[in-house]
Image (cartoon, rainbow, N blue to C red; front, side):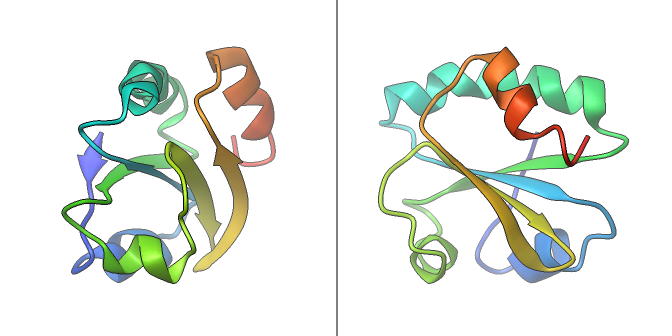
Length: 104
């Protein structure tokens, strides 16, 4: 999965022509590390319909602050430049697929 930064968030996420799931995470977050391989699988299976990117909140504080990220893991789906859906907390693959059904 691609990493995005405060600097390239607009170009990579908001201006994307397909929905983008942004995984807000940090190195110290154990649940974030648990959900990462699940997101890798979903990206491999559904990458034609949905882009999945990661944003390290410690290295990129501005975008998470702008979207009110208070706890991680937090995943936001952006569609047409706007947040369209949010998922808070680590979830198993089946639950994530249900949450993402409208976008894949």
